[in-house]
Image (cartoon, chains in turn purple, brown):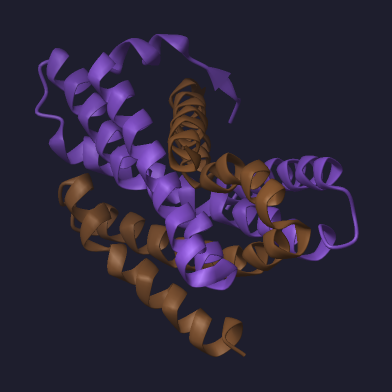
Length: 139
Length: 113
């Protein structure tokens, strides 16, 4: 399956949805910082992988697919929820990349400089996520 | 001031990754961006500046546990949506206790020691 960039899908997202993502993302980040400040890095670190925007993401996928199906005269609810399931499966493959990102921070940062470590962690996230997605597509 | 900065950076980073997830097709690959390290990227520089590398590395170890909890959570959400087809937001919120339970279990078994 080929990678495609579809910029027309951005038109389906309403301005209020962009605002709500921004606000929600900001709030979750503040919450994660608050937890780390009050309960220390061991508890706080858990919340760096909190699925904060995941519910909003799958909800938007369902909503946009329903609208597309309705425009074609179909009911769309059933397939839209299936589409949201595909999004959730994609997220589950992405979590392997998230684990890779965190392992690099954990194991490499104490002995290496900050910027190269973060770049390595980001690269690990991309490579591992893509690898697991590729393997899953071929199953 | 610190909270305001976190809010702004968090909002921007999450929005950028959400847009990438929207634009990239197929949907299963776009979904990968729902599990991007957005919160970590948004807070790393501030945390590093404030507490140093050892603190961030400790957070990284806990983040591994949080990400394993995210894996369990997203697998269950995907399964429930595929088999039962409830409203996506309802399924995603109703399953959040799975993330908390897995994270708490890993904290008790691994991180607390």
